[in-house]
Image (cartoon, rainbow, N blue to C red; front, side, top):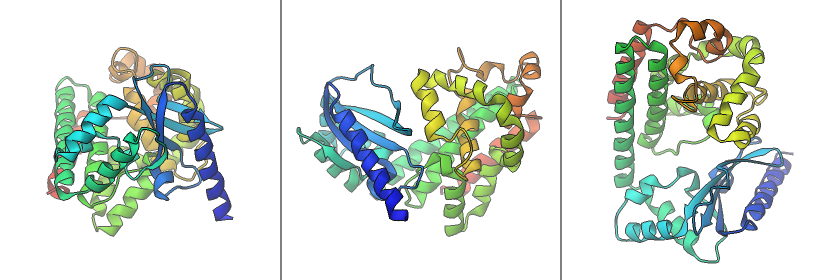
Length: 331
């Protein structure tokens, strides 16, 4: 029975790859993510690397194919070939910038041979000690930047906006802890489950507790049962700011808008991480999060996003805890 769903999922992935292969201007296709690495689960979406001569503005990043989410990652041929050349000469910078979803990808269509060369270099070099060290250093820099922005927002008496920066910093810290333990970060909508496994394996459960606190996950059940039915359509409308109808459809099919996949805390993490910052600050809700008038009219949304009763001191403590955790767990 297990093998049946797995075979069906892999067949679906191949069919999707063919659809993209047949698009005008496509020079090659690789299948990435868990489906390439043999780590798929029943609700896996698909990451495709699409080789193109020039970036196609009409090809959305977020897609849905036969009821499942698909991320189309465009790789411009002349840029990629230049990067491959640099890596072959020992420069690891391109490796650190390549989409990690395509590590250990499966080459599906590659008449130019470019994607095969890309895979060879990426697979061999991403987890070298030098690359991992540079990756963690880069993530630490992002974490420090996000925490500093959070402190600046606290100074402006904007604790909710500051919490959005703390959550972004925590997301980077989760990635960094994975790298520090030689494991690939993946399956963001299963962050809660997978991070718990990682922290148990390496005896760092306080880091998992911190993650739960930063995303206010102790109220997961109530937020989904009480607030979600009231704000679902509003939230899905906000997702359009990430790419119109295709982004909205992606959230419905690849993030689980019905909370039926038994990964509720991880899925709630996705919503609480991204919804407050989509389209920020011009079109999104970021600038409104600390506006008493707007908050008063948006109590259910604030509740679902875990922002109810957010105060200066609580956010300051979380920011300090993230900074301390990074110093402890990443050194």
